[in-house]
Length: 265
Image 1 (cartoon, rainbow, N blue to C red):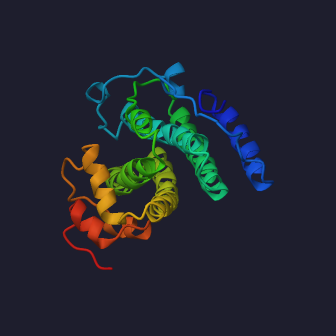
Image 2 (cartoon, rainbow, N blue to C red):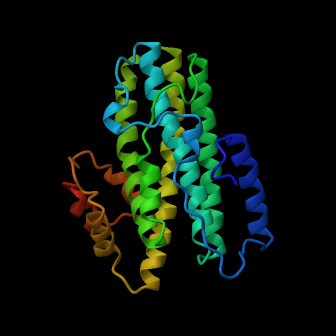
Image 3 (cartoon, rainbow, N blue to C red):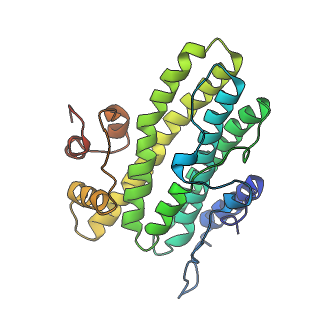
């Protein structure tokens, strides 16, 4: 199974097959299917997992090691995102076929993002697994494994949307070093990822709204309630990327509740 295999090439082959099954209408699972729970992420086979506070500091971007540490942390996010998309496809068989198609498309994108970034990492003389990682996204997926509504709120609409806030900050920190070819290449890939991640968050927004409509729930208040339930509204939100989040489907009501100082519908 692609979800427990650490080989990204195997994941890619599996996604290709699964997209084919969806397209020919063979994506339905047998009655009584129960998704398996996983105790550890697939990358546990190749990465040392540590608490977030023990991760190497992301700084000194004018050095090869500093760039490698930064790249490795982003590569890890993209690897995690592959499994998050696959898990959504696998875990919620009650959802329509289009739901599975959407998250398989996302998995395809995340595999491409991983490969682009991992290639840059290897060009610096490092490989995925050379630095420790944390398992925060995996744990978030486990905590939301029982309810697709909560999964769509927490993963794409919170964590992936937070990536839309952070990506431009990373780009701005790297720009002073853009005369270095390695940095220039990283910036080009980050720009591609940034635009495509907006679409990923938009897919999560669509299915979150779909679930709210099915359950006759208010979108904005339900989202905020779920964030509060998981204690996900801590910290400074002054860096909220209002424009990107609006393009991904967020309303001004939600954005102001999250901390946006201004927002125009």
